[in-house]
Amino acid sequence: SPAWSEMSTEDARGKLEAGLRAILARELQMPEAELELDRPFAELGLNSVMAMSVRRDTEQFVGIELSATMLFNYPTIVALAEYLAKKLLPQPESDNDGDVFGDSDGGVLSELFATVESSAGSERGI
Image (cartoon, rainbow, N blue to C red; front, side, top):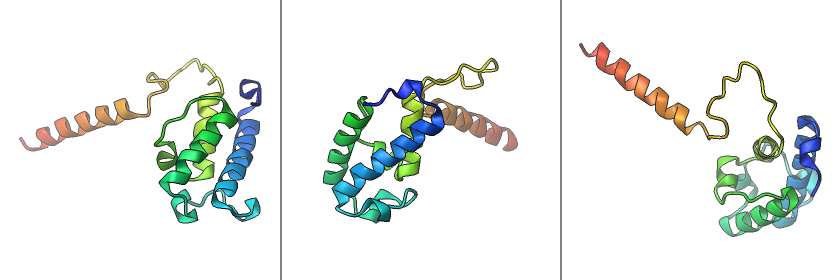
């Protein structure tokens, strides 16, 4: 598989989109040119059996293990390429690193917001 970590984000994303498009086109038996990058996989006719083989091919392509829910969480080529680029490329360490939670999927954050909202709600009820 390509040396992802040595690519720029743009290059990696472009390569990922092209690779994913090829994998999906093969699985869906349609010409790559007709496969729109931002069209949801379900609309393209991808079913769960196909999704398994897309995941397997994608794992081989990118060289890392992927979750079974990946295609549902990132249901377009654009979204999936974006997600994979983030996983594959070393993220730049910024000085004001606001993203304390690193690789978490925002679960911690959304729980945090839910807590804040519920406490705000109870104050209003006074």
